[in-house]
Image (tube, rainbow over all chains, first blue to last red; front, side, top):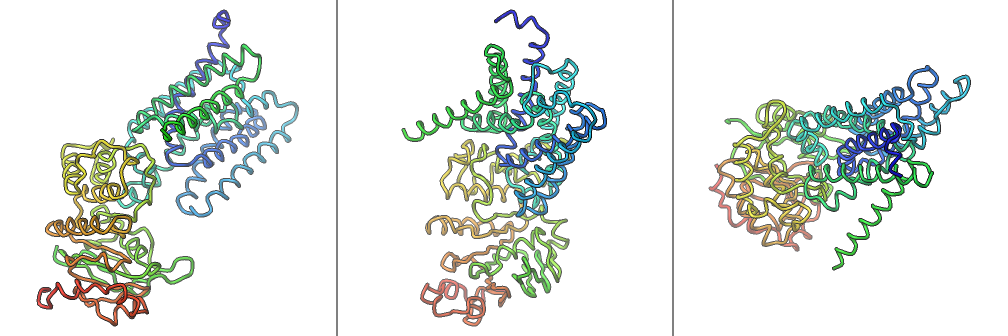
Length: 269
Length: 257
């Protein structure tokens, strides 16, 4: 087993998993406390449209995904501020339209779309060296934004209406937070794929919520859990020779189930 | 401030095509402890949301502290109806109450200073929950949560404190205690309170209005039969519930300017 650590691809995979965990622990915490899991799910599925556009234009599909997720995050964020009562329908529409665009673009692209399956279900063992650097840069961006806007993000995720009454720039803060969600989703797509992103974004934070009394602690614990799940999943998938993304997600859901069970036991005693 | 702190003139609001407020003209003067009573669905929360600039009236103007709601609302303290947000959010009482200062925290990045912390500490003190400062809000009782929500509004040092049904989820003795606390705050701020529960009205209230789409007031603490009749359309029922004789009895006619 140990000899596998000598391979670049394997070390890259582990590094990518840990870097993605930093983003997903911090941003996932906001997604969980603000209860915007469905919104995040919608954003991640619109990424498929961007992947398809990337193939169609002959550019890096991940760049296309970044464009689509950021645009859809801004679009849905704007609508969530003005048309709250229809938000779940709007999310469904964005979700499906993004996927549909992706299918059309891939169809229109002449020839074969390599790695398409990897974008849908993740293939962390193929993460290139360059992606590691850009993931590290995006982590820095996310950490920096949260350090600078910590109180603003708290205000809009805790009590949006009160933030408005205090005359905080609620719209700008909300959209900034959603852009961070979009960036994080693109990082996670490279680890577990579009279909499974939502689990990795929310499960570590949901578990951490049960054991944290403050937002910063919840973030740190989510990062640690995310790193453990991705590392464990990558190693296990290699040993068993099964898909890595699915393994990471199954480990996360099993841990979530265990945490819920623990909570059930402790609340009864 | 000389003029009215809240000044509505001819304000009408419709929600989903249904008129909720109609032609409301209303002034709240500095130092008032103004209670607005009315049945559920009578437009009380909508009235407060119009004052806070959270909804735009279809007609009429709203002035707050001499400016528009959007310009001045950070100088108001708002106590929304209980549970408009999620108490499972991982945050301490201290941090939640401090966040009430954010409308006054300038600069980038926003950071709390000594004054912010002192205001928050004194708000916790006023509401009698200083000993709970470190506790997670999800672990408070209902009454303690309500105290924390009021403390958040007080931390801003508001010129006007606006409360939406502050006693609806607390027992009667706690409600009375809240009213005493509010009375003690009247030295430093104007207070506007809406409630559907006439029985919760305290003798400390200096002016009363009845709201049911239209606003009825004599700009003093009297509730007259015609106001109740107009607002509730069912005076007998209200008398049966105990029309608040305290409001009638405890305020002599000469007490108000």
